[in-house]
Image 1 (spheres, rainbow, N blue to C red):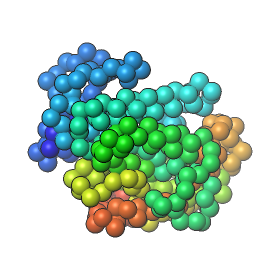
Image 2 (image 1 turned 45 degrees about the horizontal axis):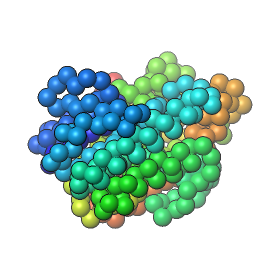
Image 3 (image 1 turned 90 degrees about the horizontal axis):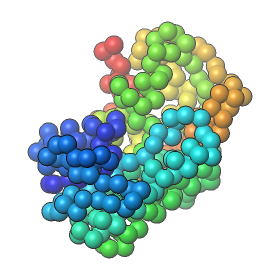
Image 4 (image 1 turned 180 degrees about the vertical axis):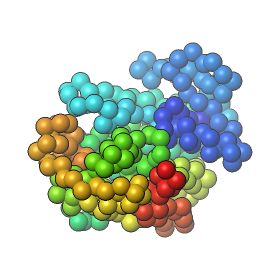
Length: 298
């Protein structure tokens, strides 16, 4: 296949490009600067500009654009940046994919589509959108793919959980704390934390690219959801470190503000029903396996 990737410089993007090339696919990357390599094409989503050569002859496009939701404390300006970094590029790329006749678009989204406070209720791809900033963001992000889906492009929406990776994302922040024996549960610890290993995140995206019968939303989340307390114990075991502490909710709210209630102290109990029904086999089906893959040899 010839695959065009937007957002190739991030943790998931770099791993995806490498995996696709290992499998023999041709990969082009959209960059927001002057193209400096044969596989690069320049685009400027804010100005709705995209090198028309980028999508010529492409079999699929993958959009992974989006600023880090935990990159800094949320302000009105940063929340707008989170929206603009997702919705605008998605609209521009979806419109271009439709115009170029690209058959498939795989677009990122998030498991917080279902809202943060779902309690013990299991949610899958048929569950409705939740409430809150992140749920609204995910809903509007997915809606921005409408130009592609309306044109008949097979559109897959990858609602990703927290991606567990050795050298990036949440684990890179937690690693030094747990290494020093300062790990612990957050708040009550009863809140669910959807997760997926980096290998399975990439596997799910490649699976979506190569299965023409798959379309619509898919939950990129491990098949065995865990609470924050269970995650804390599993991470301590994987790193061979004690994790005895408790960070109270009020302290998290004081530290990170609104983000605490949206993404730390609450979380959806999301399961990957669509992926499993389509026949995807997880490399790391349990939190222990995923964390061992990330930290087991350290």
